[in-house]
Length: 296
Image 1 (tube, one colour):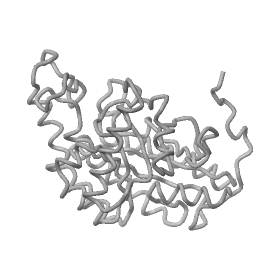
Image 2 (cartoon, helix red, strand yellow):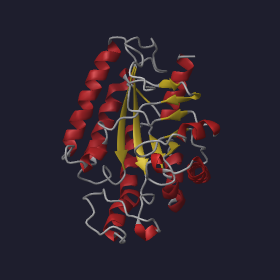
Image 3 (tube, one colour):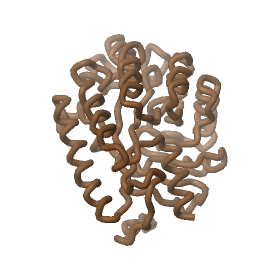
Image 4 (cartoon, one colour):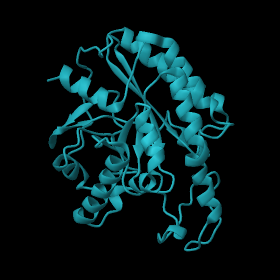
């Protein structure tokens, strides 16, 4: 019975973000391609979820799925980086270690353009699957080393696919991480009572382009633009009524990097830029530091 279902209990801290707004927005881009499990890369299985569900027999190399993922780094990355430049907005890139190790110059370019490099595991896999803390620690260290070598940034934040393990947060705290985002339970950051140095910076899977790959999700780019717009409207109204809020919007290079879905990225960025100081669009490390400073 350790789950906290109360949270702030309707008594939210009375704070403003650094630019005076009460609504912060985090744009997240996932840098995973090349770190998905593939038999051709020596993994025991190949990732099944892509542009379509894989029909290749388990244990057989799926070259089509490899190419679907490769599009993200080869083409989608540049389209999305240019859009962030054009709208002058910062993002946090969740980077899988093996993806960075295979394309370090691309990770370098992300950092050169001013975006945060955060840890997303060595592979694109749930950390709940690790059989031991030692095995997880080994892969976490490999991820950190690859990101730091390519970007010059030691990652301060972490998010993995699916769920953490029972050991994940302890391993992160030992390594000096400041924020963790395997949390889907609030509209505001909060302290992890078991690891006070870690700030839980909630993420969201509804305002996320993975829903283009789900049968109950988005089909056309306009659907995601409208959905995110509705979220912005609700949270802006709450913020302007005096309640601090955080909106998380997630993207993937292989999903919204595709031309037909790219407007779901570009148009949302345009809306955020047009809002000016009504919102604070920031990297997740900046959001974590601002929250920690305001709630000491």
